[in-house]
Length: 346
Image (cartoon, rainbow, N blue to C red; front, side, top):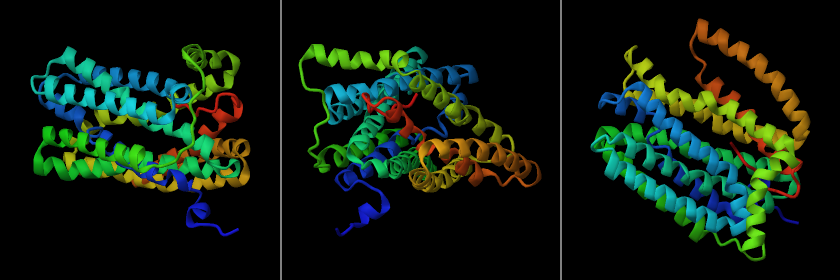
């Protein structure tokens, strides 16, 4: 049997357009991640208010991420992704158009939190599609490609694009362009993607509600899924806390916003490359054995990073590599919950 280039690199061919769509959509979503906090503080918000805004955003992301899988199975991946797009657009327009110009803090909390419901429904629902579409022996590579486009859009292209756009069209207009990128990404993922595989649960409202309840009951039925969610929360806390305060810290040492954004993008440039590498490694050696070795490697790597930070400070690419070590871990979720294939991320 002739193998296509998609087979060789582990990318499910029927979902190729959707992968591109995720990349572009997440680029739009990640436009403000590295600079919004110092921008708001510079306009008069306190650091505590900025942190509170990002906390509300994170809470809605967590809720949306947890239920993205069961919603995709109950109502279909494309419907769930479209719902995420609508929530993202409503939240973005409300935040940028209504609350941000006058710094109306209560409205900012509501609209930015609404925006947070968007991208997990759009992006993480796609993981369910991957779990069904990818061959079992290639799931690690397929998931690695997902994290490649997800992080490549959110943290790499989003950072580099905003470092270019802010200087030319300003902060507010840069935020407005996220609407264009989200719509373009949705076009590729939902329109250009012609995969006909139906994933929704057959049946009426009662069956769908039972499926939705699995998002809660699975924590009791499969405690390891809950444990996996807790691990992911701990694992990503520092990553998403950095952009809240680190830009101001860097500014005290003379780094401009543009320079900081390029640093942030560089960290995750290394990350997306190693997302793919460790996805391939996970498929070769097996996920359980891989994760055991990953834990040891991360401890040793942390010591190396500490040494580099003290004596040279050149740790950015290494930190991105370290983060990628967890890439195949989300393959464990469908493995421990075979009746609930949703790979969910808290």
